[in-house]
Length: 218
Image 1 (cartoon, rainbow, N blue to C red):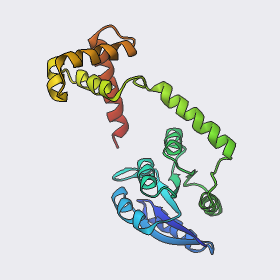
Image 2 (image 1 turned 30 degrees about the vertical axis):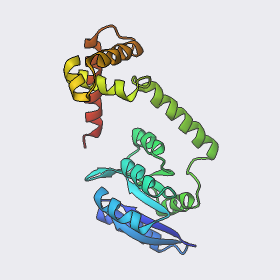
Image 3 (image 1 turned 180 degrees about the vertical axis):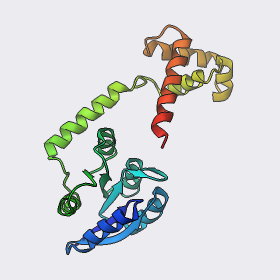
């Protein structure tokens, strides 16, 4: 059976060029195109492609997050990420999101078609051993880079509210908890973060929020 391919790219010339390449292959079938995240979320689940070729940068969102969302809706979907530059951070994010491959827009036509064919057959563009090793390394890096990894969801919520400048009483009202319970959460959180003062936690919460906002900024 032909590999069913859906192409997502906001640049019309590039999108139609990829679509034409796919349509010219006897073992591939172009089943749809989209230019935005919104269009993709509406059309891809209905089309049920085998492979989605996704631009990393889209006008209304991030192709990596789109990959993660589409795969949650269609677990068997294979995503091939496409970008115009060698973005190592995007590569890491794409692999963590479950993408099967990552290619630059500068590749020649034959290489792109072969990349689609490779991921469509259930393979990765990396060798299985290398892929597993990289995934394991990336997960370790992500865990080590997360200063909140020891905190429970409740303790994380308390930390965020401390970062907003709320007192224990205000936090207890916001979370519908007894003030004594909030004090216990604060104490446990500070201990896990190896901090002595509430002000240190507030600074950390602010830094994490600013970092998260900068990453989400287009």
